[in-house]
Length: 68
Image (cartoon, rainbow, N blue to C red):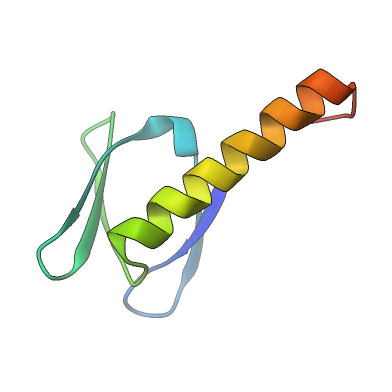
């Protein structure tokens, strides 16, 4: 899960595995596989980096035997 910030400053936690598309129009819109769209303050690249970091962390824990 990754933490994102909605335009009203509310922090939300999103399941990174459900992210289908991230667009900048200029607002950043995250579209989930469920069809739900969320407008967030982070840039497209920041969202991508958060997802990469999250997935890297999960896989590292799986391969080292640490708890996820």
